[in-house]
Length: 136
Picture 1 (cartoon, rainbow, N blue to C red):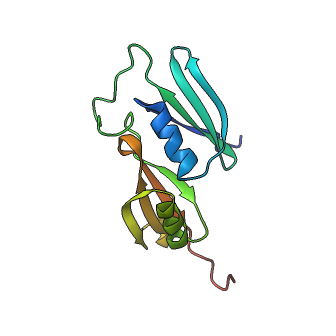
Picture 2 (cartoon, rainbow, N blue to C red):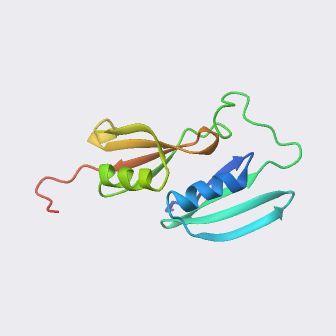
């Protein structure tokens, strides 16, 4: 059995603000938007080989009681890039707010940075260390 990335799903108070963030800052393509999908707005964006899904609260939904400042307790979404510093600079030009500037502090020596989005979501920008002898 092989597992592959399919999607990340955010529940949010403001679907339009969250969708605008990923569309405008990360330049993701919206592949579906429904104003009323089973009682709430729902957007799907293409992200690599999978999707990023954003849904509003439906009647009766409540934020996570353990971590109410996070979007339903999600810690962060990680995206891979070839150059963290250059990517963060580009994201800032597009209106992103840096939560943590690039540092070589990730697992296995990764260069990482964090971008802050609507409702305090965090997007980690990750650059894996190059293998010994690997060229540009």
